[in-house]
Image (cartoon, rainbow, N blue to C red; front, side, top):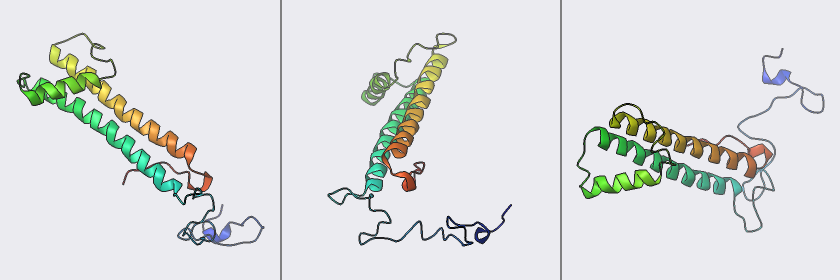
Length: 150
């Protein structure tokens, strides 16, 4: 088993090292290593995918945060006649994915915490799944990496 990069033969059967900082191949005039990184209009596919994935992550994270805030307000016995608490409650009921009455056992606080907690986790899972699928399908092979938030 080879321990060092220079012990791996390259595709011509010769020994050589691979410089991971340089990437695979030469860069063109646009600074891109691959000619398929740009569409006809000069739009970088990687940056478009990152922006779209960032928007999806932001929206799904916002929905999960609203559900978590509703759980906190409900468990802390907030005054739901207050406009802010009413707004959060209405919004949480709208993004709860129909899970408002999934668990019906125990006190009402436990029911709300479980139902909206599961919905918040599902929103995070949906966001992760969408961003992963978009990055894996849209990006070309050499740039097809798992999407990571920075």
